[in-house]
Amino acid sequence: MRKIPLFFRHFKKDRLFSLINIFGLAIGFSACLLISMFVLDEYGYDKYNKNFRNIYRIVCDIHINGNSINGNFAPPPLGPALVKDFPKIKNFVRIRKIDEMLVRKGEENLVETNAVLADSSFFNVFTLPLLYGDAKSALIEPHSMVLTQTMAQKYFGNLDVVGKSLLVDNENTYKITGVMKDIPRQSHFRFDFIKSLSENDNINRPGLWINPFASTYLLTNEGVTEKELNQMIAADVYKYVGGQLKQEMNTSFSELDKNGDHFNYTCTSLSKIHLNSNVTNEFDNNGNIQTVYIFIAIAVIILLIGCVNFVNLATAKSAHRAKEVGIRKVLGSSKNDLIYYFLTESFLTTLMAALISIVFTLILLPYFNVLADKQIPFSVLVNKYIIVLYISIIIIVGLAAGSYPAFFLSSFQPVRVLNGALRSGFKSGWLRNSLIVFQFPLHSF
Image: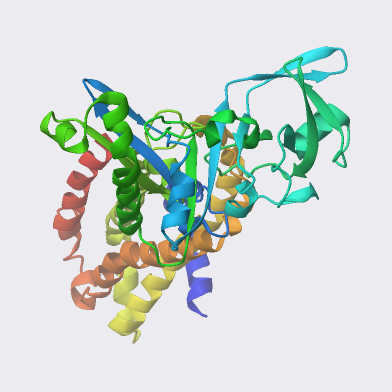
């Protein structure tokens, strides 16, 4: 504990040097915190679903006669057939996007663009609780509708609106059968209105195996892998689609292969959609895994720059502290005592920088949200992953940035220090010169 007063005595003695060290690290830490919050936010998409590890979306990859489709589509019968043929697939839900619809409010029609048609199994697959209504039956009947709490307030002024109705497109009256919580921000889709898919005649028409129709999601048992599920999908596509290919297009899978064409359906894990999917007909703008990797690399480089600056400043100050080291050794301090002292000084500097960086982060977060087009809340700072990561960074940076100064300064020989024999060596320290050279590519990056 005696080392802490010594640290503050040294801090007071050379305030400018100490402040440059602390605020330099604080700026680097703050940048790393903001980037960490961004990365955590990107990886958190769709994980509000209790079964997110077992939910997959089917995507099509079709290339025939020079025409290609790579999108968020599947034929209407595929989901029901997979559940019927493979016990490992527990449930499915089909979602069909509506470009826009007119909803009557008083004497005016309002244009709504976040509307979809969905199977009644929607709430069995996704964890989206209803505030009012029965999730099991809410989307069974044609012309039934579930809306979010925001839309309930918008059109009715309250949330308890089950049993009321809305006029849509000036011709169809929809009965409100449920009010759900607003879909979480970290979701690859954000719907305000969910209409029953049972009103669409195409879902039960036979012979629609080659017609991409709707987004289809599958809920599997625990332990089913993406590879295994792709094999199930391929088996059913081969089983059911082949006959219709021959009938409708006068071709077969073998002939498609000969011509370099293909008719494939595969699946994507729900947790990968936001960062790894780039198919057409996405419900919302997705992120990009490459952008996340770039941000991670930037955070690492910023930390490296902070550490390098810390070591450079410490070694540059070595000549001024050499006499202090010499006197301490003459008075009986061992090398281990000095190492402990300088490491403590490094950790206290790092800790002060870390605390200041939290203040910087709280100030900068609103501006960062605007820049990154995000809505990251302040509460993310107390996320367990952020806390563990930040403590780890403090320990690593404190150790990495303080090790060389600690071992370097503690190795001075008292006699040589006190007679000034080491002063010329400080000016040409190979590590400091190397670190200065190392900084150039980091800063240019």
